[in-house]
Length: 61
Image (cartoon, rainbow, N blue to C red; front, side, top):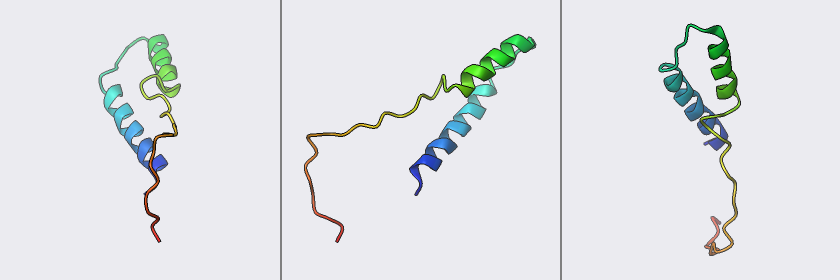
């Protein structure tokens, strides 16, 4: 499983859903909304963190 592809698929699906509610006849507003969505307004990059309290378990081998 490619978690990055899964995230992108979820973002794409949510964007399509969110855009179905965002309609404007004003081209300037439409372009502004598109720029904000393209910049990730509704879906910021996920945080990547290390948990120093993680207890090491058995290996897969």
